[in-house]
Image (cartoon, rainbow, N blue to C red; front, side, top):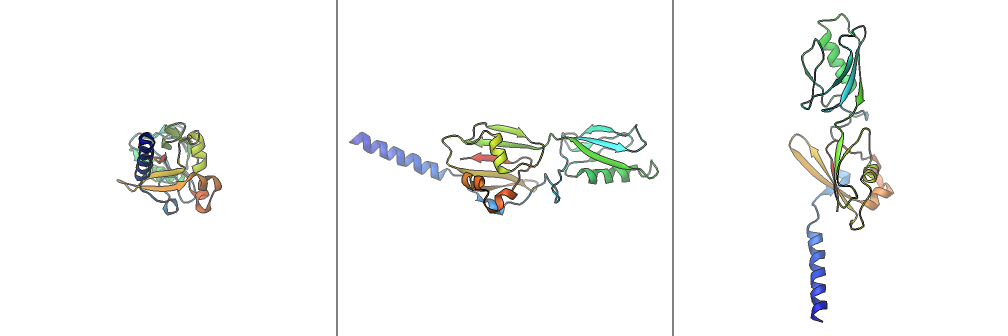
Length: 200
């Protein structure tokens, strides 16, 4: 009898600890978009990404370049310029302006040829813990599928940790069931570079 009571007390303690260790988080409906995509849904350039710069009639400048880890893009004839956080069209406009004093009426186009900056991280009760590289818009459900889905021990609560601003992060939570059902706003939520997804 004493053993049974001890087992019950132990089980209740584990349940209590499991509840108390839940990550505090706001509802996912309060989530705002981050810095990976612009308002039109276009991808913003990040560190490590490869861009193809085409300056018509200028083979010495045209080529494929990689953005440095600090976000700078080095192009012949120009000083290194900050590329992180810009869309390809915004970067093309900046290059065109910078070339204005060197080339008469430069025509510039920029395309993103290799995405390396879009990385998200999985932890907790997922089959594959760790970093996953993405190269296009990815929904919550797609991301969890890439992580192999939830383990048999998962409670079904999913927490997203996202960087907001320069030095702040916020936590948002939803349920796996709501993600599967695509409830309301969830289908509109896409991951951003640096997001951390924790399955409890």
